[in-house]
Length: 201
Image (cartoon, rainbow, N blue to C red):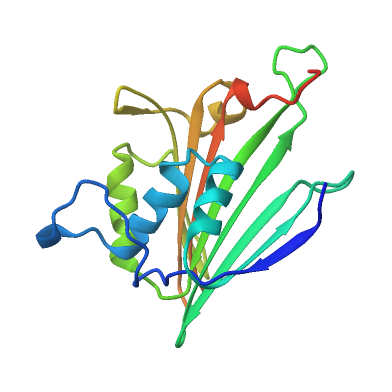
């Protein structure tokens, strides 16, 4: 594995990342929804697909850390425009499974966005986009988090219990967190899919 860092020029979340998700110019999607759709949804969280898009984009800074014995491969992309900043990360989480092999070990791709421009309309639009009720909601002292676990087929989504995520193939988990203060709006999309199972398992 190579260890390398590339400095690139990328577009800010509200700038020139050209994204088309079927909306007309008159009804353009909020920037955070467009960014999320482009990098997390259209790629299905695949690290290689996200890396390709990031490296082709003009501007910003990308850091790619290779996989080691103690940590997974990790991509981080940061863009600052004035006082605003957006950070995109792509990596995977290893799920060990169970000794009885009913639930096999696998690597679950994770796409995360930290939006310091506080595009609340975009976060609201992402929650509307998923189209299913939250499987869990937590209102804490410093933030409010909505979790959605669902499956989809032919463009139709249906919700599932939160606990099903790790034990059912082809289940998605979306998390949207609104900070109560000046922190970033946080969006995370994970996909538990048997096809992500490591070789040899």
